[in-house]
Each structure stands twice: as C-alpha cells, then as structure tokens.
Amino acid sequence: MDFTKFTEQIPKIKNLPLPGRAAHYKMAPEMRIRELEAGTIVRKNPKKAGVMALFYPNEKYDTQVLLILRRSYEGVHSNQVAFPGGKEEKEDSSILATALRETFEEVGVKPERVEVIREMSEIYIPPSNFWVHPYVGLYKNPEPFILQQAEVEQLIEVPLMHVLDDSFLTSQSLSTSYAKNIEVPAFHLNGFTVWGATAMMLNEIRELIKQVV
Image 1 (cartoon, rainbow, N blue to C red):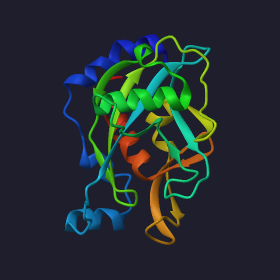
Image 2: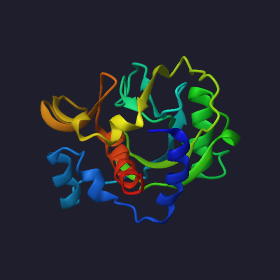
Image 3: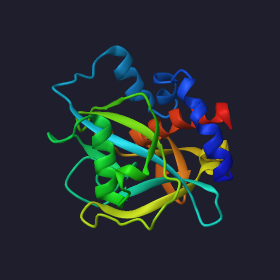
Image 4: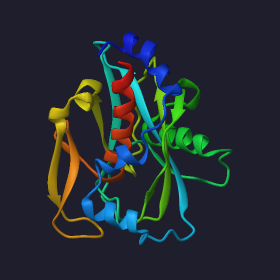
C-alpha cells in the first residue's frame, strides 16, 4: 500500500473502538483463552512494558511495519519475534515514553521522529508477568535503522499488505514456556512465525486498519 495513502487513512483509527480481547483471542491458543476466561492466571505485581508498532515507507514508498527478532538469551522471550520496546524504567515519564525510548535504544529511531497515532489495548503476558502497552506510530522520513547488538538479532520489515492478507495467517504446533506441542495461531511473515502476544497485538492493529483502508 502506498505510504502517502496510508498516512491519510490511518488517523481515522483514533475514533474507532478498540477490538481488544476479541481480536487478541483470535491469535491465542485455546489453552490460554480457557485460562484467561476461568481467571486462573494470577497477576502478581506485574511489571509494565511499552512497545511500538512502527509504520514507515520503503524505497518504493510502500508501507512497512517493523518487527525485530530478539537474540537468544536465558529468558522466556528468547529468539522470538517482537515489536521494538521493553520494560518501563523509573526515569520514564509515561509508558508511551518507555515505548519511544526503547524503540530508540533497540533500532535507533529518535522519539521526536515518531508520530504517535494511538495506544492499543494492553495485554498481559503470564510467563514473564508483564502488562504490555502497544502504540501505533508513523515514521514518515526513515533513516537507516541502528540495531542494539546486545538484544536485537535482526530486523523484520514486513509489507503492510502481508499483514492484511488472510493468506499469511496460519497455525503451528509449538512448545512454549507453559506447554508442550500445542497448536498456536500465528502469522507467517517474511519467513518467520509470529505468535503469542506479538501476534495478538498485531491482529488488533490489523483489524483496525482494515476498517479504514
């Protein structure tokens, strides 16, 4: 999709009701949905994180959204696909400031260069005990990304049209931090399986965008 057209249409999502849980559940394993509905997942002083779904033009001026592949480390989100973002720090003035700071640290996008469109529905991640607050932002005049080598393995620059196309939806049997060999709804984007909280957040964004483009 042409980025100029996209920037003209995307502000319309500000006035739309958020799909929230309904959109999230479409990309959640049945086991996780049952646990959430039954109230068996206990939140114990959860930490906060902010992430940014960043939309920008490529060299052909087609709209892209940025994902990252996290490096392998000893943790539940090792080597997973994610949005740029991370944990709230004491110096952050807001959770939006967290998302912007972490996006700068991880991929080199300066906060003042991001036009924030809106906050999306927060989502709880039981394995790491985080409340994650996602935002949608425009990066209209992108400069080369600068990867934080300690945390980011590589960039995953996804065409928006792939996100909107149902043929990129799939499911896969995965072993997660909380279960073995469970069927998980996912996106298959740029050769990567995008599942879990990232897929849930991406699906809510997807459903809003489809209403305005």
